[in-house]
Length: 84
Image (cartoon, rainbow, N blue to C red):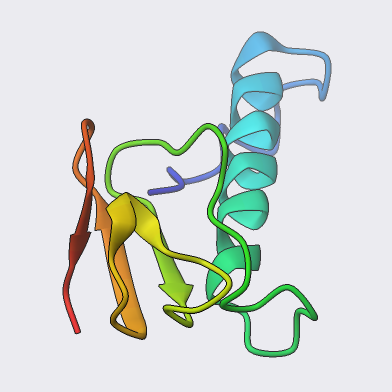
């Protein structure tokens, strides 16, 4: 989850801002896997998932943990778990 911005009076070069921008970028990268407007939607399983990441898999092109069901999957830290 993205935290509140560090504060308007800190310079953008402050490490707190750099960390915040990194979190925003990571969130945007993760959201591409559940964005139905993305041409790769449902067709790709991320190579380096992070715990709690959600993806949609079509069960044909993308088969997380060998699953063949189409739907949403969550990365538990060691495997993809089908959630529906």
